[in-house]
Length: 390
Image 1 (cartoon, helix red, strand yellow):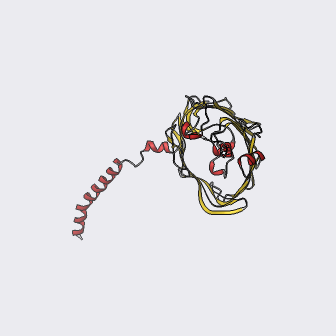
Image 2 (cartoon, one colour):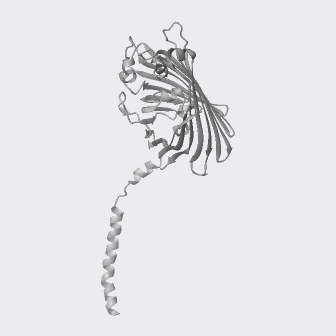
């Protein structure tokens, strides 16, 4: 027994010294993420905007294909990095990563910009941002839009530039002004060999945007109205008007967008593709006019019904044919959708949706350019989730 007591007398100081040394080493070791950085992370969100589905495709009523698809996957990182500096970055992994040769940034990058708080009411932004054209179709998270109308589906909606916004004291009226590159591609890449004779490249191919966001009638009605001017070429300008309206009453939310785009040179290429059997050049003096309506109704706390209705008109006002008919195409779309939210505290939805679209070409377009009417359909069963991981 005495022998064991002697052992412990000698071992206790050694063990105590080892514990003290370990504690000192742990106290001096820096964490993987320094404490000051951890305070920054509390103001930063990392989101995987996701939509995945089993899609079934139809053309003119005939089934053509069925496949599982990752319809949307956009990684978004946003938050404050300073009391007066906010940043936002969003990258799309479901888009071909071709280079934006004008702005030197990949076109798969939706947004990469900084916002500086100049005053509590004024902000300045710089970088790649969404064009504030107005309209709720474009402003809605893309994972919520099963199919876009013609203008938003074919336009360059994410461009590099600068913006200044100012809010009135009540913050119910916000005015935003943007100066952006008018496109992501160079003039030559945009129109290739289709450039009409006499069109000259602009030395400042920019887009100027003015937008008003209003909150009216105790916030029951919200608006986002804009006018945009595109200086695409010296003798081919563009004008774009968009009027977005959002009305909310109880369980019903109703959106209505009206959009009109007049283009000296066809930026959307819809008219150009119709007339290409007879004309080798991009169409001049074209216009697009659209209506987009979306209704959302919560019939139960976890069950939503949605209905989207849209139409689009494409016209060639500069057609040199004396027997011309300006309007070439009227297209229509309807998207009924059912959503089920299985969790109270987690924004994930199972959905079933049907996308039906129809193209009605004018008799002039059919007889002159060989255009053929047609319908497309898509039945989808899937999941929509903005996955907030941080």
